[in-house]
Image (cartoon, rainbow, N blue to C red):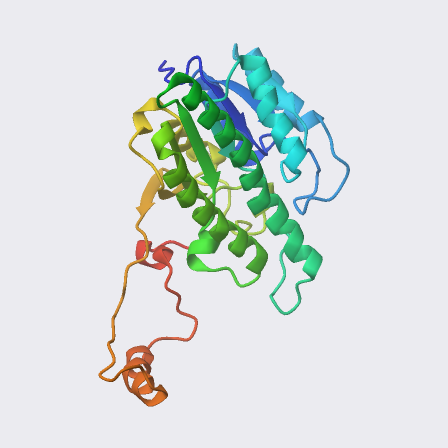
Length: 312
């Protein structure tokens, strides 16, 4: 069995269940020491009492299989607890090499019905949670690079969503957070490349507690692996965390059911130039209105439409 991550240390957030669990198990199978983070609240909206059991159970599962793992039950949306998470990896295994940001919650509502708290909480867990851990991991790698005088090994894999790519009418908070994560990823990739660190984002589609209603109409197969199983996503995370992916940086990849699609950055669809010193309303009306005349009002610029994908 190939173990390209042997001797490396990984953090996986939200790893007590679903995608995070599958990713943590895959990184361990590939040889990594894993810090299994999960705040453990039972509700997919982040409600309920924090519970150490999910993180501890996954860590034990890794150890039982012969790997090395420790649990962390802090909230990555809390700046101090995110720092403690990164420090736990360093204190336990001597260094941090891989950060997989997966933790998140859902509080779905149409834009006209959404409360300020529902907006803030989703942005807080997804976007700030990704920032918090990335910030402290980046500080660790930058310090190591300065000490050694050269590049170090570092990998960040962030979790975006097709809800950002294709739009999701009832998830303005979630779609915005996932779009922000892509921006965070590309900025981080540029900032850390000189230190030897890569940062990439994935848009996974999987049947988990977070997506149980999205995929309610897709029955489980009678036999074989569910096309929506998180196990379809985990190998890509393992690859992006590996030495083989050293040239993959600042990328967005859609992954599900045995398919990986590399998403291009947005392209200019059409370009118009004014014949005067500046555009007037009438000139813009004459140029743009015919361009959009035959397009449905709900059509988006999304790359996912080009890929023939639907958001998940």
